[in-house]
Image 1: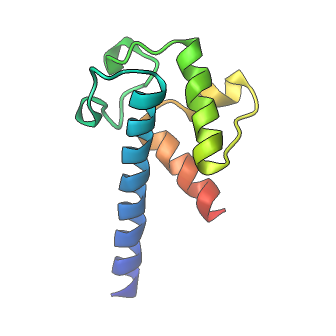
Image 2 (image 1 turned 180 degrees about the horizontal axis):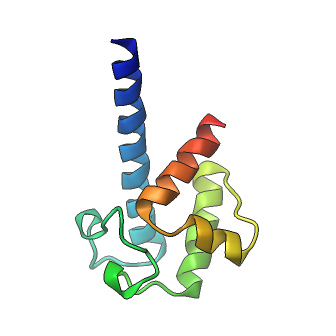
Length: 100
């Protein structure tokens, strides 16, 4: 019973992080024509499939927002590209840092 409740809390926190990330991307990258529902959790953010049309300036904006929101600093562009691939992976990364 306790394990199931902990799992539920973990998943709810993860879903909140995903929603926060999506809202942050829309705001920081000025994608007002996109809704959170348009951003799929498992699609590469910097690929044409995402429909976000993100570029290197957007990557910088996202990186700065992650530092501001979560205190997470991604060292270099290679680490950024490894970490910020999908909403799912980014949320897991943030969750692991928060639970650290």
